[in-house]
Image (spheres, rainbow, N blue to C red):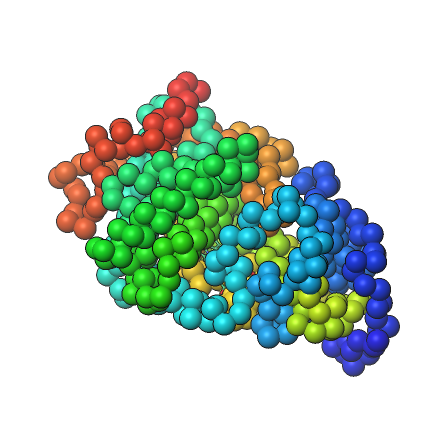
Length: 466
Ligand code: HEM
């Protein structure tokens, strides 16, 4: 088969079937420590689309920028939905495949087929009040994020006005979790136990499976409550926009929201902090000039939180890169690899004031992230508060020694050790100061915080001394 190049040329396409190949494993030690090198090696060997072994299951990894766009922008040609996966229908995906559990929880990110369009439309409607800057709900959320950030910083400061902290565990991870709890409309901090189960699931330790079961059960209970008594929260808006969803289906959608919010937003916050502290001279200056969003755009492009997207499947035999992808073959778009494609990277000018938005960190095409504004707001408010409240914030480790954690889907910092000094200026507004709390502040009272398992966990992390 011949494949056309963008410049009018053509290339001979390799027709070897995926199941006849013995692709190299993607998730190696090198992938964990130097993913850019792994993507480059694959690109050298196979071109813009490479066969890889994903923990025993073969798949195509899309490394080219153009090829990624080709897939992402054509949902009919490259639909999602595990029912489209030929190897799975033919029983060639092992029942105990480690990636099975995260892909088999069928929700909007994974789903294809006729159920998807109304579900996506409902997500867009349900998120709108939180993302439309003119909506009171969006203003209240932004204020709540500021308050949560201040609370977390004040808690860290209980270890002393100068000290050491793990900014990931003590700020970047809990902040989005608190936001998720608010979006979900958990009363007070009652959802904390459930939310901390999300961390157990994401960390994929031995207690991940029971944690997932508990979490889905709690979310189904929450959905039942919202069905009876709708509130101003995401589950109630989703139910109103898509009344046909069962409790199980609702629980899966809420699980999706919780996972995306708590993991990806946390990664974005930590990565932005590292960029500001260790980046070129201008980064801190641009932050004080109010360009947090611009800094974040550069960060999200250089280090996308979602490095590889969930699989799509060829609707029919299609030439992509130097290979023929057979109908039903799984295709994983890698935003991290696509951003390193010389075709994209070569056109990114590092010295421009405003960086390109043509990157793939939020996806592309009809299935692009619907919560981009929400995620950016939470992260930029959080990062903004950090650099306002701390007069000094420095990495406690050289930047190249920061510990990373990788999964087939995401890449983020495992911890972010910093030395801090709190600014001597009065806090903008202490969350629990009744004199300064406005009517819109809806933080739980301090005694509820003390009862909260999240708060007890965070208090246990406070390090005293220098
Ligand atoms: C820094 C944070 C985030 C990043 C980098 C991010 C990135 C992405 C990307 C790349 C996709 C497309 C995946 C694909 O094409 O397969 C996506 C989809 C999605 N994201 Fe986000 N996301 C973030 C936060 C969130 C949050 C907080 C939510 C929910 C409140 C969310 C909800 C979704 C949903 C529902 C989809 C599926 C859309 C569809 O398939 O139609 N994301 N996200």
